Length: 311
Image 1: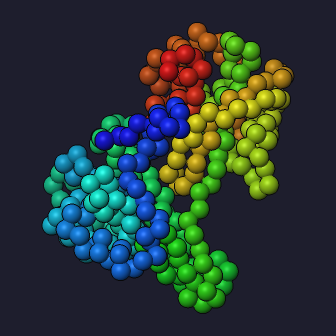
Image 2 (image 1 turned 135 degrees about the vertical axis):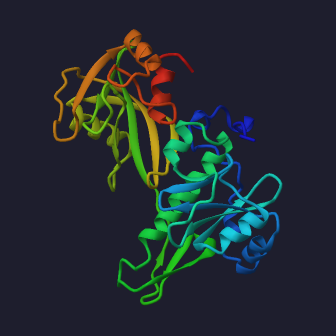
Image 3 (image 1 turned 45 degrees about the vertical axis):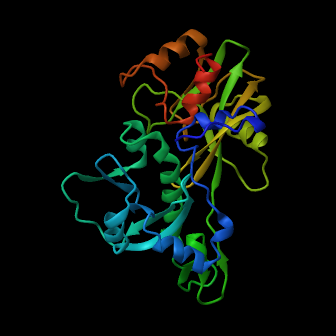
């Protein structure tokens, strides 16, 4: 069911990334119509995904439930949101358990990274799951107003919270992160690692964009801070929703205009230049401890594979 890029808009590299393709039509214009949302809730064909904190309920290889299974789960929801309509106009919702659920035989709670890394469900599920996880996380973190501290209530099918005290309107946010593969000519790229990475893994440098900063300047600043490398031209390549908790990864390539590395040990464990043949070998290596690249679910992997000519 994964939809191909629209031919009218040209080739879309972003659609190659995990969590990036969502077959649901969000119908944001319907969210303020409480009667319409209620009709979707009453639709016997409706689908439901259930999360507990950062994990999604998995049963018999599926994370979406319908019929009597959905009916039972709706009764356990603390918060639910309208995700949209699928290709057959069936409404999809996501909910969060009020408390830790008692799992039935054959059920498990799985975090989204493991879900994608291990291919536990069809690829069509990752986009809606990312939408659900990021939005429900926002609800958990915004139960009280950041202006006056009063409780907030969910409206607009789960895409707005209003303060019951001062009336401030709160909306879900997405935090942009630049992630970049820096090139030194045609044959070398800059990869780094932080202490929290598994042994041997090197990947693209990355960092949060700051207020009042362009994407290009964020690339240059982060690379300079982490590696000491100066970057000239920057070009955008592809994006990826990254629901950990609610980021948008902006994948870029940058051209190095200096080559002497000065690693910021407060942030990075190491940064190195890697040649094309070495990178290709790292892309095929899977053993922890040996030099290898990040797993396929990450946009960093996509950037590296495209540069290496493997996509």
